[in-house]
Image (tube, rainbow, N blue to C red; front, side, top):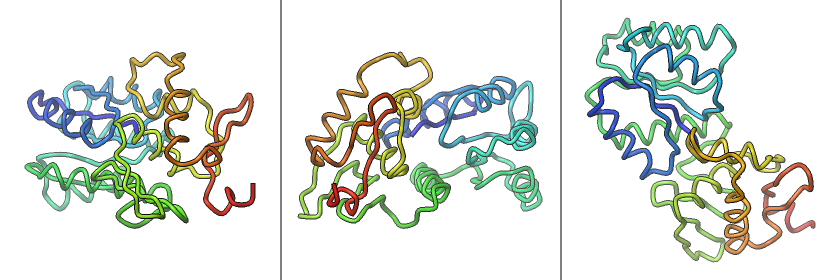
Amino acid sequence: MRLLLVEDDKVLADALIKELLQHGFAVDHTDNGIDAEFMGDEEPYDIIVLDLGLPQRSGMEVLANWRHKGNRTPVIILTARDAWHERVDGFKAGADDYLGKPFHMDELIVRINALVRRSHDMSGADLETDDIKLNEEQQQLILASGEIIDLTGTEFRLLRYFMLHQDQVLSKTRLTEHIYEQDFDKDSNLIEVYVRRLRDKLGKKRIQTKRGQGYIFLTDAKVTKE
């Protein structure tokens, strides 16, 4: 999943980036409101973590502008301003969640994962289909047999995106945009490599190629009918 972090405190931003990368997120970062608004509008983020006290343009104004323009990307407000009326203002502006500083990193990660699942109408602690489960905390694949398979960072990000978009045709470009950072080479063939690796773990029928369109991750029920 691809995440935009908007935070002007360099020490905190560096710590957050490190933590988010370890938890399987591709992270882009900016430290001011003007660049944040532009990036949030132009790039296909899955979730945004937004500080309110930003230089050049406040986080509240950035959020309001996004929503006014129809940008529905899930947003978690991260701010030292934690009075109840400020939380109300944040939700009125279009925030999906709110976390006051100081905070525990683990809580932020849990909130991010929960919001991502909620935005895809999914519930539960883990992503799962009829026969497999993805443990997001441990970045492990759990098969119906009970076998546990460790995933690399890229394998985890790709499989998580597939599982959030089951039975949908996903182009290679779209997959690349959502599992890698902004400066990644969009013409790279690495997606094909990692799809092949996931097929080795899941079975070749699980991820099917739609020639000229991309890939589709099938639910177990549909796989058995092929």
